[in-house]
Length: 550
Image 1 (cartoon, helix red, strand yellow):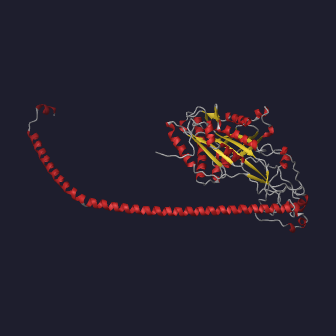
Image 2 (cartoon, rainbow, N blue to C red):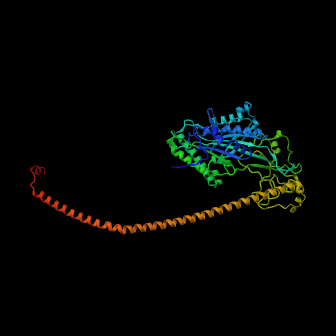
Image 3 (spheres, rainbow, N blue to C red):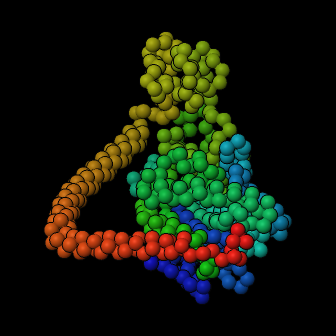
């Protein structure tokens, strides 16, 4: 009898509404609006109900529709927030975009500028998929319903209409920027970005059960990607996830940013009640039990945006146009260079690129050039890069302060550079109280981060020390138990030997000797009787019929 432990159990009679409520759907959406990445998996064999649970079927609503309704209900209370949706499928080493917004744009349900493209670099090629800003529940549900129809399906050994790819749905929430607590116009702003990811995995099935060669090949590819995902989940269970798992498959690469520490993970395991699927169902149940050990501490994604420099700090910068109408309509970067310069770009040290759409930081086609004074001082070198000595690998960002690896340029070493305004070169007035205040705030933030890191490290060290002591005590206890068992076994062996060599031998040996004497007597009698019968056979005459036959 095997026992399995789960957080919740749902039967065939339970509706998707019950599953949504037990998953605490409103709480998950609130977490997304606070800037956390929430991921929901549907895992199981073919025909067990994964697609029905995520997308729904017929008259029953799926989890996706419930999440969309709750997301828009919350967006009406959070003024200024925008919702963006995308859907694609993964099959082997390829990624295919499933949304087709052209018809909805023609109908006026979507605007052309609401649809942007993003790209993902896979092993040897680059795949593009589109992200659309949706303004209502109906628009979002219709867009994703058409994406589901475009998904690859085929015949399998368990289902005549089976999904033959992994479907991934992303629902991004961008909250408006808010002023930081330092106050004043010189303070920084922060914007939170959250994502709800729903993954409808293809069903696990045996390759030899498929009736066609194409089905066998498809099952082989899907099982390979599922095996890579299983290894990634195993690493999450043991808290040993590393970067190598990201490169194992395209599916892992697509979901990497939404499974890392700091993201919320929920898994729905679907099993078949049929007896012929017993082995696959037991494997799924074992995976579900082990997945309970996945513990992820949710962390919100806040992007700190530094205030734009003044008009005199960078000669080539353009003044930003104010107004709510100039806010980006989509979470992606704008293709218009004029709009790009109106966005606020943070320092390179704070900007961290990921697969999450870049809501606040557009990609610039070109960097601002240096002033004429600096170019003249540097000998009229073309371009915005500065070569520091003969070292290769010069910094890719324009900087006259030298490479971060240690080489610095002394402004007083050159007569031409000595006349340069240091405030103009650095990008802001060094004597400004606001600049000093910003540097002090940054320093305080770095110190706070360092203290937090040191505290976490000390807690980790103390935890490891406690675990080591616990293991040592358990090892000592086990060693003592082994020694006790060894002593008991040796004592039992001695008792057995004494019993066999003592009273038992005295009881058994006389009876054995009597039995041997009786057997020898009976054997001698039989031998004598056999000799007498043989003598009589030789003495008796042979019949005539027998002699003729011979």
